[in-house]
Image (tube, rainbow, N blue to C red; front, side, top):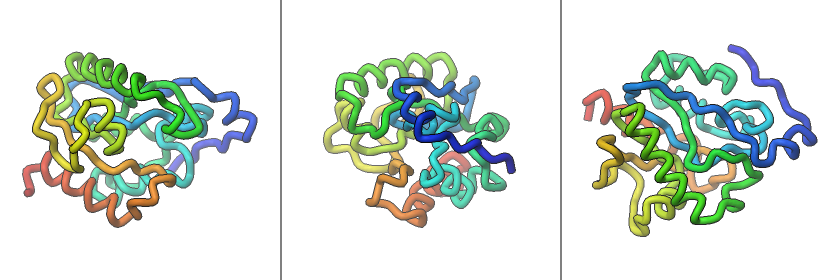
Length: 186
């Protein structure tokens, strides 16, 4: 496994408002949609790069990947039928630094991507961000009744290490439910 180079504190501070390139291709099974990149991801140029982020371990333990991928190997997801984007492209220290209107604008931009690339499922990582961006104040985790440009919408917990509501086992459970849905095993 490759290892993402560890950015310095100065690198991270300089990453404010930088963007991380989407990992996307036509016809994906799942397009994972984060809230926005953190400064660590902005500094490395890779999604979910901060060592405390549980996205990569969760994907592996839930069965999406055959081995634990390093964030620098994110493009390997495309060969498995998965991709990554964000509601808001700019890096911030925390998602709390985003204005609600940025999330709403991000939803419209996400819909444009979904129309273009046509994934089967869009998995939004973060219930609070989803509720704001999609104007669904009562939404719960799991599949949503609405579709986005023809794609099923599924909400998963945010895998950030800052999300204390979910430990790794809980994240794996929710991600595994999505995998069972797309593989037809539920």
